[in-house]
Length: 353
Image (tube, rainbow, N blue to C red; front, side, top):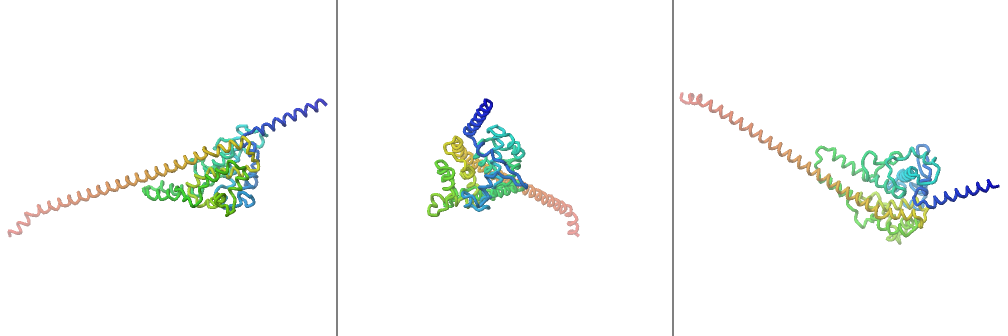
């Protein structure tokens, strides 16, 4: 009997200890990283992502068609965000769970994933990587099937690459025109700036209330709620400036979409996420926009310098050719004069006779 009591006491103690760990966890590890990354027939997924994205059955995303959803982010992108969170949680031992689930998914962990214990950071990270926030060989997460860049950024990069590989590369005006197409802020009446509207509702409301306000489709109250939904429907018309500027707002939407079944406004976890989603995120996007602007200025300056270099080289070559031609003419003239002088005695003889 004593043994049974001891076993029960120990069991209760262990359960209480585990429960305390879970309740005390202010990270997203216990909320999301416990999920299994499933694999079958070359397909990979987290159940939560499959339930809410690239589907017409989720109440808070079905206002977008599947094609419209994929244009913003794909399931692979969201799966990557959760997988990168899981990698961090596993490596930092941030949770109380069997090591098996970490070992099972280790082969899919991306070595270049960022360090953060909050899913919001990883969602923002994949959005910015699609917009080419990072450069180099490891720009996109290849181990988790995230291999697509934003379509508009892809077109812009192709144009810049073509210009860089063109030896003439001296058409500064075309680069400026391309900049105007991608980097100028859309007109206010196109409703694409949703940051203020999202920020205002992300804080005070629960995830579900926030999502209801974002996806509301009541045209009578369009000016209050439908602005965000309508803007998202027109994502294909957003400039790169719009997409960068709204990256934080879109990350909040995706975080709420994945989080609302687990929402607890009073939790430390949610309060941490709210702080992350505010000024640090906005500061990062503005810094990136400034960097992109500086990059375009540098490209235009280099193009202008190359134009001047090409022009000066052409002009010098022109002067050199002209100089050589004049020398040839002068040399030819001298030869003719010599011929004339040599011929004068013979001409005089003929004239005398």
